[in-house]
Image 1 (cartoon, helix red, strand yellow):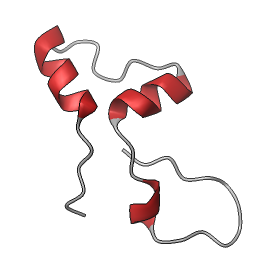
Image 2 (image 1 turned 180 degrees about the vertical axis):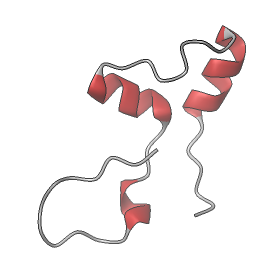
Image 3 (image 1 turned 135 degrees about the vertical axis):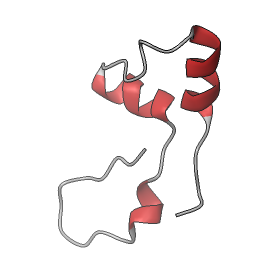
Image 4 (image 1 turned 60 degrees about the vertical axis):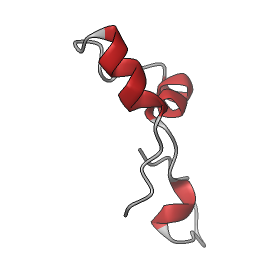
Amino acid sequence: AFLIPHEEGLKGHWNYIISVDSLEQFSGYNFFSDLDEEIEEAIEKEVFEGW
C-alpha cells in the first residue's frame, strides 16, 4: 500500500510504502474484510518492497 501526501517536492513512491494495516488504521477502512481472518492478517501486515 502507498500513503502519499498531497504536497510538492515528493520523493520516489518507494518512500511512501506502508502496510495495509497501517493504511487501514489511517483511513478507518477495512480493505479485505471478506477474506478469512487468518489470510487477511497475513496479507495486511506485510510491506511489499518489490516495486
